[in-house]
Length: 175
Image (cartoon, rainbow, N blue to C red; front, top):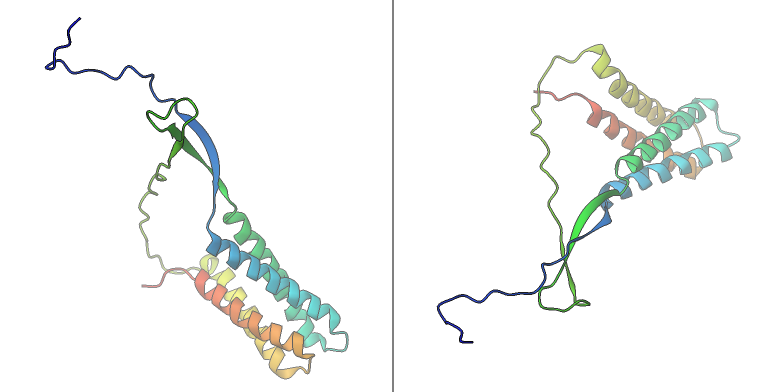
């Protein structure tokens, strides 16, 4: 039997077998922000409970702020929870049955473009951000007026700035 060099020779090996595996993908930045918000709210709540002789003018907004911070931290953690993604594993060609495997990670499909529509702010779109910013101002002013333990005072100050930034970020787009 003679082989003709003009006829291409085909590789007779078996086709590559594709294996799908599931991996977890998450964003560490949003998880860290959620954990920090949760820890700040929890620490404020604990400091508030430990400040027995402090006037209620500070303890009430501190308790409300602590509850809001813990709730916001839990929401941020749930949004950034690792999601499952399918990954195809392809064996490397010519490596035998127990050879190395190559992972092919497919890019996530692009999100549809978001069109920002500017609408006039209404009471329903402004109620939550304004409430959060009023709570932040109430907590900050109460912290200035009421004599409190150092830990509670510092945590109230940090929380009032954090809450104001959160409320500011919740405001509808302004153009």
